[in-house]
Amino acid sequence: MAKGRYSRLPSKRSSSFTLVLSMLLMLSIVFLMLLALGMVSLPIDTGDSPKVNDLSSLERFDGLEDRYGKSTEILSWEPRAFIYHNFLSKDECEYLINLAKPHMQKSTVVDGTTGQSKDSRVRTSSGTFLKRGQDKIIRNIEKRIADFSFIPVVFSSIPGATIHGLLFKQVLNFTEHGEGLQILHYEVGQKYEPHYDYFGDEINTKNGGQRIATVLMYLSVVEEGGETVFPAAKANFSSVPWWNELSECAKKGISVKPKMGDALLFWSMRPDASLDPSSLHGGCPVIKGNKWSSTKWMRVNEYKV
Ligand SMILES: *[C@@H]1O[C@H](CO)[C@@H](O)[C@H](O)[C@H]1NC(C)=O
Ligand SMILES: *[C@@H]1O[C@H](CO)[C@@H](O)[C@H](O)[C@H]1NC(C)=O
Image (cartoon, rainbow, N blue to C red; front, side, top):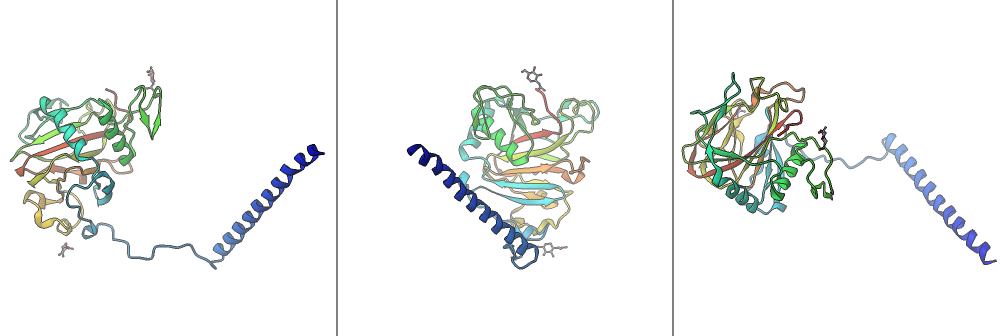
């Protein structure tokens, strides 16, 4: 007897479950029909959205907020450039500077014909490269860069690494497109004249292909100057809210004022994989203060070290 009751119970429960499910299904069909007939409509934001290239809609972020105050904004579509506020914490900025300090060397540029590094007057900063995935903090930052840019810069075969919050005993083959982080230091008067990040030679593109995008992170407070300027950008330069605070050099294009913890992502290639000459950019001379920044260059293909 008891056996029979037991066997009936689940079937009763499952039949009422089926009933609820089919009612839900019918309700959604009715809703879809009403939607198709235009009798109901989904809420759509009817507020005025800012126009493309309307730089006056850019927001100002003063003072270093914590990482919870982070946000992104579009700087420009030609070149494609985006600002991520408070991308790095103050501790991460200081960590990168202290890690690099003992190894700083005079910066070089790549010779367009030979592909060799050479000294140059167009780039007067000093710098050093960090190893890719060098430690946990660097790996965290590199992971964040990958998330921001959608370009994989994930570490391969590091036991115990986490990817997307999951802990892996052994990370399987992940392709990594980023070069190691470069840390740069500009003292008063030091600058980097406008240049492209993509290469004009065949030697430098053998490993990884062309440079597709760059993430530039500002690690220190610069009181005056040191802006990143895009002189070939297509926009009304003077409509940025911070126009009056820019140095003469920075007024020659769309400019970003360095702010500790902020990151700038820009693309050297267009979505159709052609090189984008509007990505021409430079580092204006520092007028007051000390500029520390970090650069991650990313390649079209996997970059092997
Ligand atoms: C994957 O990892 C193995 C072992 O580390 C290596 O031999 C192989 O070349 C890797 N494959 C790719 C596509 O990177
Ligand atoms: C550029 O922007 C400034 C400031 O918003 C404005 O006064 C000026 O008229 C604009 N110039 C053009 C050509 O649109």
